[in-house]
Each structure stands twice: as structure tokens, then as C-alpha cells.
Length: 464
Image (cartoon, rainbow, N blue to C red; front, top):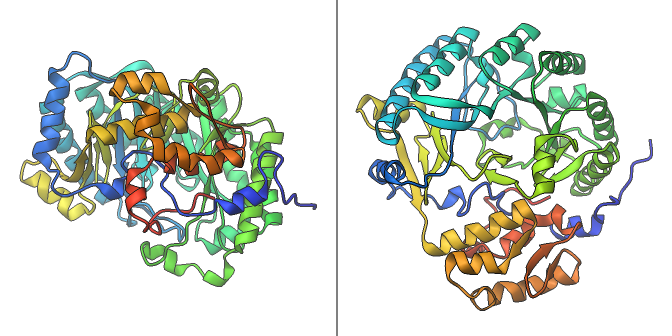
């Protein structure tokens, strides 16, 4: 099989040049800037300000289910490995307490247009437990018609019957963790799932009528080669999911203990990893997918691609979204939320999470109250990440600045990127080019004040 080395969308030379660590910008400032000085009291104040305000943002919910039956060696998520499903029942009792405390301050019956269950493995929960969880949520919030209600699914933990249960509970979007179809790669990362199983589940999901099916892929895993990943891409294109999330594996065994089980010598070279990204872009574009941005592809008819065309794309802690800019209430261990001009994060261990709730306290352990400069830079970075441009006038009117004067240093820093054909600067604003869209993280990083004063970027994943 002939493997292309240069994508027709962007040159491999440019990909190599910008293969540096950088934030994913699911928020700005990024979560590594959260501080313990932000407490439960600050969070409650933000909730009550929202409740008292007349122009509150729409509301989104995220629920973190940390349990997995077995460990995937590449995983960097907050998780608890256990085969004891009885632990889920206890966890749901604590989620119920947290929901009650949240509603005391945000108000009962608030409309919710977006719900996401992540993990861990949300489908670790039994059908009855998922039904209990959804009933809990509906007792406290109003899930509005036409909203996005999604759940992450480990194909090894569900059947067609389970998918029908998820649909009955109100979920309309599924995300299947596939990563790679190659059996040798699956064995090397301790996640064996036959392709036939995934194909059958996706076919059943379509028959049931789910609005969108996403598949997660990872390149850079042990034993992967450009040739083997090309075969996986061919299978994915035959599967034809509505959305594809294509992530680069970041090998950080000093930070993520499961990754220590990966044999470093089996990881693909930097050149092969770059080749996998290049051929992935080619293969997915040739198959008719639209590049949404930041690792995401979608069919032209999918709501995400439609939002991208219409300039309605948004970004939150779960990635790109079609929903308007939302406040986000985050439930469960380690979950990250946003209310107004604040971010917050729950306790990262089950023990601390339970202890705080046993004390009648919300399990907030850190967060951030955004400054005027944070809000300004967030507006610029999110506009770049979602719309691919920044119009000067709306930013100037909204933040009472002269954009060119305020960001003189940043605009000068864009000269190099402009010379490479990644961005254009004119009298009206900044415009990301077609090639620049594949490197939009690098463009956004120019406006990150924290990176300007902190050169220690190794804690971030690489852009490529």
C-alpha cells in the first residue's frame, strides 16, 4: 500500500515545524492555572449571581463516572479501576447529594440544553443505575426538547439492547471509544475489541435513530505504523460515523501511571506519527468529512459541520459544541465546570469527594475567578478556535480597547505565521487560512498571556 507523506491540506513540513507542546484551549485560562484559593464560597457566589441575573447563559451539565473494569494503558483520564459494580451504587448516592446542594443555589427546574456523561466508563453503570441517574437529573433540571444529550460508550460494555435503553432514557448522541482497529495495537494498549463488534453497534445505533455517532481514534500508540493506521482509517471510513475525534497520543508516564505499562520502544517514531496525521487528514477529507478544527472531523450533514459553516461553533471542556455559550455545572469526582466568569474543579479522589459531601459541602477544591484581561483573551482565543477569525470591532466594543494598540506585541508575533500562510491580518481583523486551521492551536497560543511569561510547556500535549 502506498502511504502519502504529505497531506494535500497542509504540508508535512509545517506539521513538523509546529510539533510543539501547547494547550487544547477547552478553556482560557487553562486548568493548570486553577488555584486552591478559589473555594466553595466563591463558587456559590457565582451560582447565586447567576440566579439573580436577568441575562443568565444557557445551562449545560457534565457528569463524571470514574469507573472502568480494566485499564487502558494510554489513558490519562481520572478513573477508578474496579470490577466491583457495587461501588457505582454508592457513587450515585453521593451524586444525588451533590445535585441537591447545587440546586439549592442555582434554582430548581433550570432548563438544560446539553448533557454529557463522561469518564471513566459511563456504561459501567447498569441500566437501572443509568435510569436512576437520569431520573435524579430530571427531578432537579428540565432537559429541553432539541438539546444535545450524549454519553461516552465503551463498545465492550454495551449491546444493542443497552443502546435501546440509552435512547429510551433520552440520550441522542453516542461516542464510541475505538482508538485503533488493529488487533496487535489493541493488545499492546490492553483494549481488545473486535471491529465486527463496533460495526454491529454503530449499525444498531443508526437503526434506533441516534442523531449523531462519534468515534474516537488515537494515533501514536505502540505498534502503530502508517500502514497499519491506514487500514484502520479505511475501516473507519467504511463505518461512516457522523463525527470522528482524532487525538495524538501523549506519552507522559511520569504523570499517568497506566502509561508505564507501555513499552516505549514500541512507540512509533516522530516521523511515523507525523505521517499518520498527514495520511489521516487526507483519508478523511477524501472520504467527504469536513475538518471542524482541533482534531475533529464531521460529515457535512452533521450538526457540528453545519454550525462550523454558519459560524455558530462553540467550545467547552468537552470540546467543540453546537450549543450557544453555556454555563456548565460539573458533577462528580474531578469534574470541571464554568459559571459566569469563574471556573471550578471538584476533588480529584473519591475519598476527598465523599468527605466534603459528608460535611454538607460542595466538593469544590480549586478554580479561578477570571480577570478583565482573562475575559478579553478568552474572547480572542475562542473566536480563533471556533470561527477561525477575530473581528476587531466587536472585541473593541465589548472590552473597551483599541485592539491593534492593546495587542501590538501579539500582532507583531503573528508576522511569522502570516509569512507561512497560516493567518492574514487586515484592517478589520485576523483571519485563519485553510492551512492555518490545522494549526489553530499555534495561532491561539500567541494570545495566551500565561505562555508569554511561562516557558515550561512540557505539561501540555503536543500540538501535532
